[in-house]
Amino acid sequence: MAVVVLGIGNILLSDEGVGVRVVERLERDYLLPPEVNVIDGGTCAMEMLEQLENLDALIVVDCVRHGQAPGTPVLLKDDDVPVFFKTKLSPHQVGLSDVLASLEFTGRAPRRTAIIGIQPASMELGMELTPTVAERLPQLLAMTVAELHGLGIDVRGRA
Image (spheres, rainbow, N blue to C red):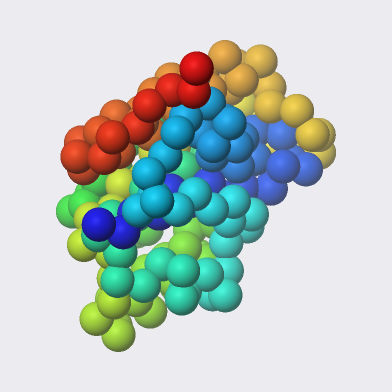
């Protein structure tokens, strides 16, 4: 099984960097088997195409504007993911949408896709997450681990 957990975001714009912060914690706090590749995708562009080809599963973590209160998490899976791209929810959706569309066009799209996101409180210049989003980091991390477990992947906390 080949799985990528992709954290995307710009860590210079406060909550915009939440995806990167989640994958940093995932790598720090958990032992992951070799079939799981964790990628800090930054602001995600077409150069990621090769890393995302022919995956069994892709889990994307990002800030997502979904019209709820700041700090509200969201999980979109498989058939819900294309709907995500029909409305402007994430600052990176154009790059990610283009990557996924290219993979689909070439027959190399991930078999399963999940997007784990959170409504940002601020995307102003700043290196720190807002307190509203920072306090939800453990929940986003738990959602990511739950997705991996749902794929049958043994993920264990570091001692």
